[in-house]
Image 1: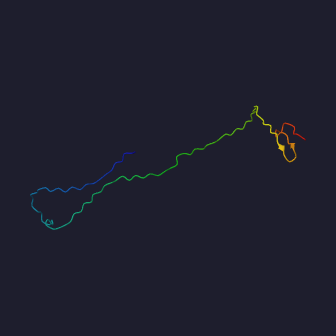
Image 2: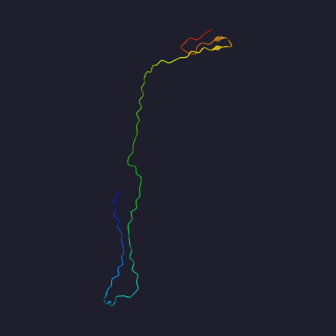
Image 3: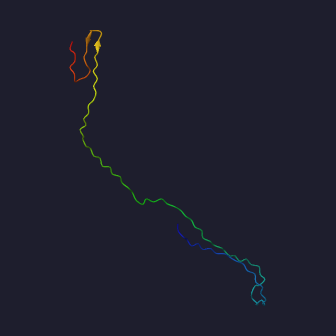
Length: 100
């Protein structure tokens, strides 16, 4: 927002009664054209996008190792092979397999 001074010109024609004698040598009754030009200013506003500043982002990455302990449930499964009639043992790798 800004205040701007604008200039304009206006032409006014006045008619005044006069009572005086015409001086010789002056073309009083000769037809002629008089031109007057009016001028005025107007405000023209335009906008231009401009970069005023930049930002930079930095990310710090940290890696840490933690020991996590908990008890987990295991499932024992007994599989029988009908073809041989032998059991295949448990699928739990911590238990010994049936070798029959």
